[in-house]
Length: 292
Image 1 (cartoon, rainbow, N blue to C red):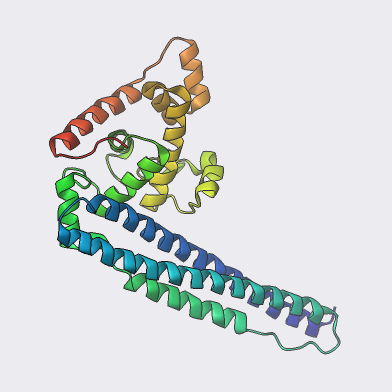
Image 2: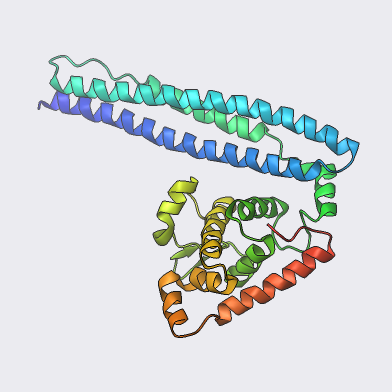
């Protein structure tokens, strides 16, 4: 292949790589948009029992969500257009490698991708967070959905409520696991092998992460979703919270070996259960809903 053709091919492939990077960034933004809308739905459902003022706020937030949904559909259409352009660039590269006089590389795909990234960032910045509304926050505190006694931000509490409900895990048990694992800190453990509040090990949960659409375990919502999905699966399988917690902590195989020896509780499982009972009392005293 001539130097001229080689140079052209490199340029074309660089354009394709730029498009691929932009598509990944847009997909991450789509997850943020989806997470925001899910959280909004959950908060609105919890608020609807309150005053007429809150019911009016629910209707306003629903209109806001519907507008966001329409923009989300536009975002999906834009992604398809970008991918089509990416394929065009790759095809041009292939033809250019064989042609005597290669055509100039079409950079419109990368320009469109960059414009779309800016547009999506602007959209996410303008979307209101319902928890910033004092009326809604006060109502959720009064109902016990949020609590100042839980050492997580209100947004993180909302994320954990949603994730625990999706995974079928009692909320007070999810709190107890987080407290026992990391004392409510978003940190790495096991020499970097476990990540975040619920100490999720990506090496063991890559398939689960892919199924749930979670790419970043440092993100609290993603961490809660994967951790609660795993714990909920164990609770359903073993029908014994102590056994489920043992499997969560040390893995099902190692836990099974202890069960064969007649050990059905560990210091870890006992500590989590004690903290779960304490959180259940705390949330109940505050008028909350400790269950999932």
